[in-house]
Image 1 (cartoon, rainbow, N blue to C red):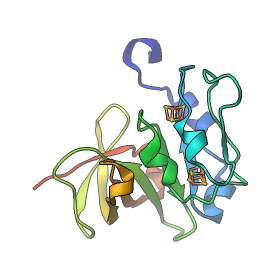
Image 2: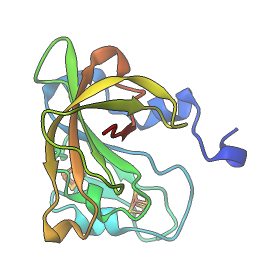
Image 3: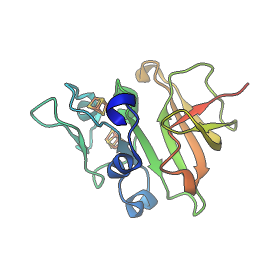
Image 4: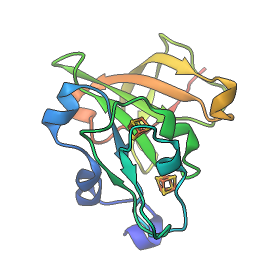
Length: 162
Ligand code: SF4
Ligand code: SF4
């Protein structure tokens, strides 16, 4: 399916997620880069040595979740919008998910928006916690969402309904 549609299977997605214990400790990146491509801005952007592509620029990036602070700087630097940050430390019932979002209109903090999966299918309503769009993000804003825990592995995008 992935080769035809570019949509990863559940197993592929789960392999990219850090353990739930790590997620519950605090924010951490999920690097959903599935193909060998000549690309490494994620490695360059990370000041904590948490993402390694290595000497061969075609390598698939590897995350060292112990080093990752969840700072989310790499999200706006990845041309493939392949990275998000998840945080299970805030609540036992919800998780926070930071995603890069390049559509307009941008949502506002406090908005309820449609949470979508990797195929663009509606999963559940989610709350916008924060919208960051400084010049240094070069028109790739970062949206922080709050979602029910059961959707941790599913929510990957949003639709803003005006
Ligand atoms: S979230 Fe921050 S610390 Fe983690 S991999 Fe990205 S840039 Fe590095
Ligand atoms: S910058 Fe994004 S697309 Fe490029 S290697 Fe890193 S995760 Fe993959």
